[in-house]
Length: 400
Ligand code: PLP
Image 1 (cartoon, rainbow, N blue to C red):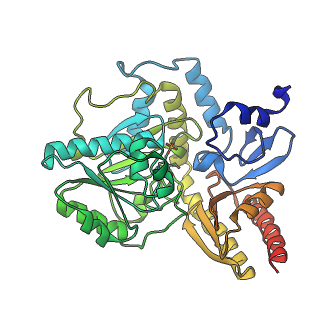
Image 2: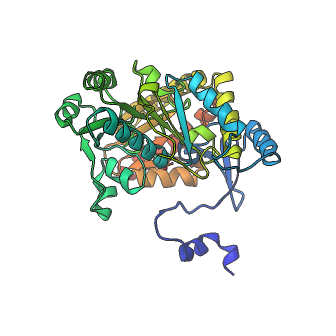
Image 3: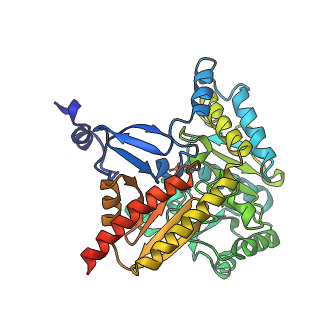
């Protein structure tokens, strides 16, 4: 009896971690997904900023098919070609020199922190503390919960691992104040995604980088959400005039297959053999898919297109802001954008968009976020904007 009701079955079987939307998705194509009743949705969540090339992109299907017939998994005891090809592509197109592959964002950040701690042990007199910011998000492992500057994620799990200090975001003075002889790294998201699409001041990252250089501390950027084209350049750091010493990636890197990575400049690449590892990290199947994704993104100037369509989307949202006085802010870069309201109506707006066939994310009680596939075009942006406009009109009539 349960087989016909996936949602009821899920309620019985799963630990209650996810508050899912009442929809069972069964299929995706490009920027569209379908539920089990055949209803179609325009997807502006994109697998949570993951489906860079949209759903089931032909270039990935081809790469996955070919690799699935060739070699799926071999241990990191051996050299395998897809991971070396992917490494070369990422290193040639970034300011970093070396890479380690893993399976998720949290794991990439864990690796980056371990690397910074090794650097601290070897070059900073045993320094081990990492400075992070309030409203950040770095993942769900215990250490990354401590790194994530949001008490709602931390409180259920105290005592947390030590060695993390959360300071004000967008405040270089707070980082300076927190720096001590124990500091072995500063980790920041160039734009805070989960915290609400919080934009830094133009010179913030530059000033933090300058401070880190002055103190000889690794400057770490978590580009898990902002990287691989999302903000209109291959990596967000390129738009802020900085270069991280360590950078983490995941999400859009594999356009839907689970992969993470951290990259480092030569001078901080201090791991010795055996000091870090992973069974699945760099698996040939996911690396072939990620290689196809990144190659497509670079060869087709997807970041340039993201910039263009993102600006267009922003202009459409700004005209909605003119129309609806309860929109208080439109912010973001590329295709990572939030719309903020003057009250906690994000839940009802999200549900009303869902009803009308548009998937958007409630990022805060008073804000929604858009993170569609990077291949979205202006026509699809128009469709989404028009659904949103109808939703907002209904909200206004209920408000008054
Ligand atoms: N870092 C950032 C900036 C993120 O946005 C996320 C996920 O939303 C993570 C880390 C954690 O990634 P994952 O869920 O793959 O562990």
